Length: 236
Image (cartoon, rainbow, N blue to C red; front, side, top):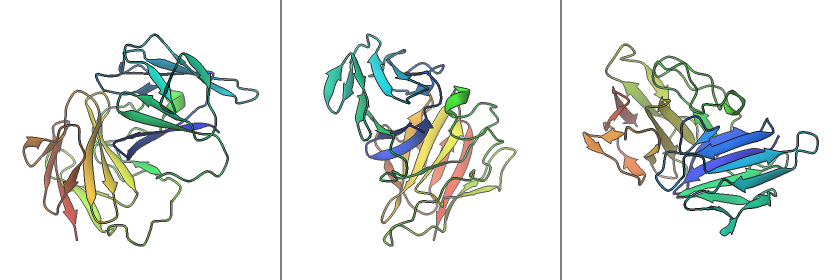
């Protein structure tokens, strides 16, 4: 099944399988792939898929800053396995070849009481909705390189109804947050973990300060605040 691998600043933040004829991309939350960035138009682009042949094309919808495929501006263009679509600072890799695993797999751990999944369109859901800070849903495991940071890291909820519950950071990328409010990702790198804002109007806070748009490293004991919930990063 064709799929799109979304990343920003080298951090993979989600994977979306293409399961219908028309998949929309844009800043507005009703898009199938909602990208909360000012450089992305409200209705930026659309992905067309021939359900019989599974041929895929992307079309720019008259966006302000344009849609790029492999660094070239396009109006409408067929996508081939490995092509990279650029919307603002986001890079979206198109993967169509079966068995292609040359990217970091994403695991989703929800945080919040919303009944919606991180992606608004049912056909593109990456994970089911769940109460605040549940355990991460099952996803195919990607072998970790020996040099990756220890998997003994976790997020502990320290405020709200779910206080005391934990989310183990066992995957390369774990996404936490409340859809429509704030989504953040925690990525396991070779020697450490980094926190990044993914989408939503509320920016994550680290030790009482907004993190901005650049991923920031985490250290044991750091306090995170996201969507009105306070958490602690524990590692070691």
